[in-house]
Image (cartoon, rainbow, N blue to C red):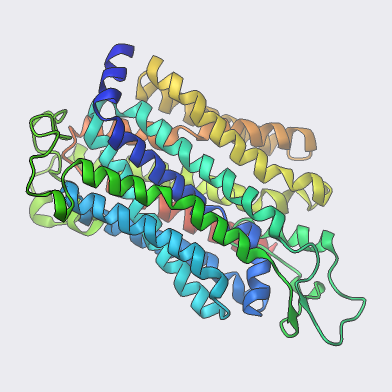
Length: 444
């Protein structure tokens, strides 16, 4: 098996590395908003309630992009062209954000980025499944590891440029100005979508006055960090003779094409957008198990990705509230511990995917997630176990998406809409569960 995996990778290393780098771009874009939101509030001179709407704008657009991403899957040219366009858009968004001085304009720009992220999410998963089929599990694990890597890099780049004090100085500034500890508390509370933030009025956050923020440099640095990704996609298009200047020459992989691992020679059969997957003419003769597999897989990822989004967004708020009352500084580490555990878990599951089948990994992960959630409920007054449980939850939940995607596509013989449906279900769960947890939190 090890030799087979290595030979497959050598055969498709250009495509594989390109798709992995594209997911780094996705991770870079998904994690920057939480740490920089207060500085963006200052830049747009908006209220905290107004700026938190950009979370919803990005998340909803990501869901929309996930749903339509399959439309670009018809040919390799359309797929790579879409990935190139989306990664370029992400760099442009990073470069343009510092020029957005109105919260509505910022929301529109982030919505465009969200659509690009959603298309990347669907297409990169689809392309790897198309390349490797029954052997795709380990490569999907690496793909999702790169999300975590990008999500770790983004806050690290932003941190040196974040304002330590109120970045809008009012002309009649008083001693009621928010302290640096208050601002750090707000940043940690806004790590999710901001829906659960309460008692906003107690913080003196001015909207009129002199804006003092250096966060623009962070976005320009991230734009530069991301530029090699569209360059890599463009290089792959050149290698595959898909650019206008190279179309008259024979493709290098003619006779050893990307679809050579497909059982029936038709790698795109069944795949498309969520809307094309709902075509009644295509679904009429499908057996009941076809719908059950899609529904069950979608439901699992709706819950697990929803847990990731809501837990990361609200574990800090839970930690600083009764009965735990952890200090703001200590509670601020929880989100980093969670994402680091997810990244480390995906790194570990690369090896486990080589040793064990996808069904075993799925069962192991889901049992682990359920057990940890139960233990967190039992030891809800323990500060120590909150950190231990956060680490364990991240490790167990990290593998669910790539393992389930590989297994679902396999049992459907790569003829269903598994990738599109699962990606859209995961995005929906992440958005809706965060909103629900935020609503419950705000009412408590």
